[in-house]
Image 1 (cartoon, rainbow, N blue to C red):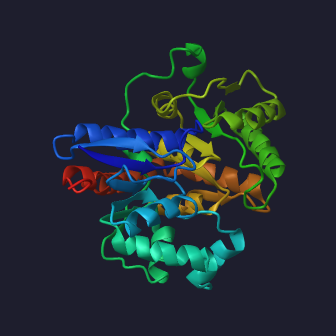
Image 2: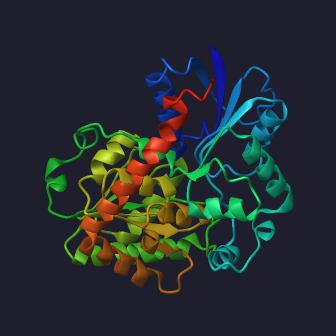
Length: 358
């Protein structure tokens, strides 16, 4: 029985990373007749990769140190390596805009050391799926061998709904109201475009108040433990306990998915809140706080539903895109479904064709 190491940002109780690891484990179990292996999660600081036959760089913003170093060492010692839904992040806003407008070379985008390692990893990898088109284009411009590189979408797209997981602990009368908007807030420790979480938080309070004036109820949720304090602060700024419900728990992904199916649309700070909203077939307004959010939204054909967190008219833009979510809901859901269906087959390919271990 082979041993597979799944490299991800694990053990930090972050919903998105745990969803992707769960999806990987489930696929390995479901296709155990084709891939005779045990899968193990990466632990930060792991140096000894000798026991593993295959190393998989999993979903997340992992095309950076120290994660690519693990895969680089694996490839250098002849182990099988795969890239499963990873993406680039941590590109500043000026470079993002220059890159999207073809005004910057990729060496300036990634850095020479990472650029070199990524080219060698991609050349050695048996399978490569990257999160979105911005990551794909960066690798292509870096001179990477692209023969087996495809856009796979985010692995959290593989999340499967399970009925009625998240409503029972709430007051039914609140959830029976006609219009609900999901709202996710948290912290990136001010490492966001614009560098001012307080300003974004204040804009969201104004957005919530306006949506309440329009007859919506606001359901607030977090996807990471460290997000609770800023979410509580935003709840206090909105100041309307009748029309705003702040979820006190960190919901699991089935609970959150069930809640989102009842929302007209969602407004999300964290990337995987947008991904779960997509799986729920609920339009999203994505707060573009880092490169990865733009990469993801473009992977779903919905780049216009990202609002940069450094926008000078942030409140107005969020409300404008929110209106677009309502007006274009049918088309948005159709677009998301098309991309999810396309990506599902490619994300499952290493398991269905047995190439993960053979």
